[in-house]
Amino acid sequence: MKKVFFTFILLILLASCTNNSSQISFSKSDCEKNWALCAVFPNEKVKFYSPKEPIKVALLDSGVSSSLSIFKNSSIISYDAINNKPTTIDSLGHGTAIASILLAPANKKTVHGVSPKVKLFDVKVLNDKGGGDVDNVINGIDWSIKQDVDIINLSFGFQKDDKKLKHAIDKAIEKNIIVIASAGNTLGLSTDYPAKYQNVISVSSVDKNLRRDKFAAKGKVDFVAPGVQVPVLTPSGKLETVDGTSFATAFVTGIVSNILSKNPEFEREDVLNFLKSTAKDLGKKEDYGYGLIQYN
Image 1 (cartoon, rainbow, N blue to C red):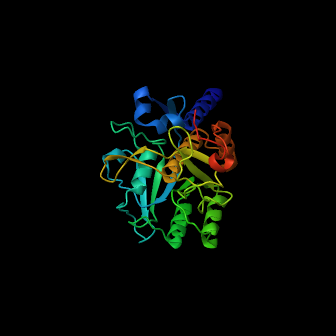
Image 2: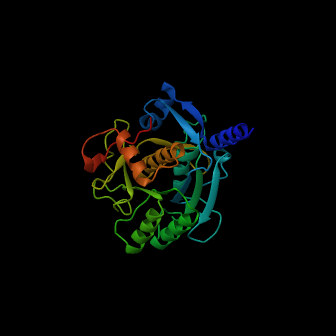
Image 3: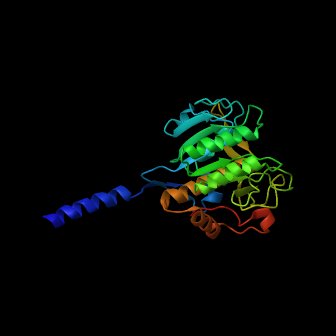
């Protein structure tokens, strides 16, 4: 009797540790409409895992229009780090575009989220003109650390180093948070901060021919991802295409989220090694880093 009882308990424990998954396949037509998806998912299909505890992603940006119908099944928690409020308004549209790359479910508008099962922490640190104050960014990072997030996405940068910003980034990394930042649209000049910091994953962008975007930064680049003519959604729910390392960064954040969803025991170095082993080599390290981010 004791043996049967023990077996029953063991089965319950195993069931509770199992990740549920769902698979999405992309048709040739899907790839023509959104080349970026099929660039990062070269098998033209992807499995999304649902761990017991969802992966937490902090998106520090201009806010997210979380009331859009496309986000109705998404888990989004908001914080305005500029005004210290629990809600955000995205008048710029930048944050909503990034969120659509991450979260959007399958739909007729050709935008499909790279990691739709994450729990998103929408942290407003950029104003309505896209400007950002370092102190607000630090406030957003500190708040994200308190929420025990797994990933911080920074789709913006500063030309100059700032000791206080580096200290905040270092605190996040010490907590085993993976920090991913855009290299910047510097016309081929040096990488922006905080992407330039050693332990931050720096992302530059490529076009559909897998060539570095002429506007993208060079130098300290870890990976590249699609960042030219990428379909996104605006705060009003309309479809538009955008360019920039900001949007490439969202793809890397989504892929890292998928890796952690499947392998929740992974530490930061495990994730980096996985990314390096699956990246597609495209050429010079100063242009492409370890290559195009991919998830098979």
